[in-house]
Length: 157
Image (cartoon, rainbow, N blue to C red; front, side, top):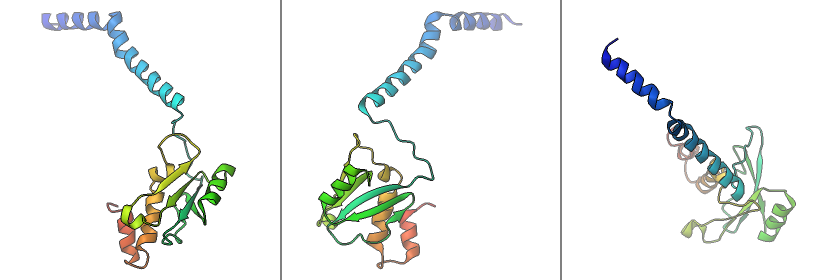
């Protein structure tokens, strides 16, 4: 073995066996992971694991009268309520996991209000695309061919 390889091997093992090297290499990532998990646990934003077979029920109050069809999107069922009070009552009783209020000026503003008992900003229906699919299906229904609606929902597939 050449002298360079002997020196290289000696330096490598000398560095790897140092306590500070082991601490920095394994300890800091472990500490970071523990801090992230603790922060999620304390703020209540740990992500729910939803099985593929589980369906979610989501309510909505439609003040535009544009969203009355295509209530089943992927694993989400959309239930329409006449008033926000009815939707709130259904949310508090556990009939729906969350509900949306679509205001009468939705087409001009694009604003939708979301209500949920859970803390945090994460909306499972937004994450899986079912809310977007619900809006696209209802807004484009009768205005464009069905194959174009499917392409708008999944432009790259």
